[in-house]
Image (cartoon, rainbow, N blue to C red; front, side, top):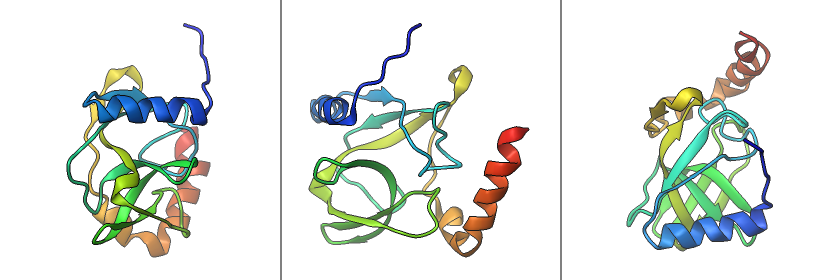
Length: 143
């Protein structure tokens, strides 16, 4: 099968429209910000529009034409704070209405799928995440 790449500014608004219609959308995310749980060029994610998002959910968000797939690490009323699992610092903020969809499934190579966790242990490991990610990138991906 031929591979085509569609720019985010075209693809993501269409994904958002399909999610708003109540459909599930499977897509392959770009970038390493969600390592080690979502791997670029290997994993797909299945997104669905949910009535309620909560801390620990992995969400696709429109940040004014810049789109991120990150985990909600804090919630304060309508405000959300997001951080990628593969990041050791830096967050984004948005309101709940900017959430296009929530990851309900991660599809691994070969078709095996997993339901994402809320990431509580991974968040607790933030002080040593830098070392865990370095090990993952240098050693685990070579195995």
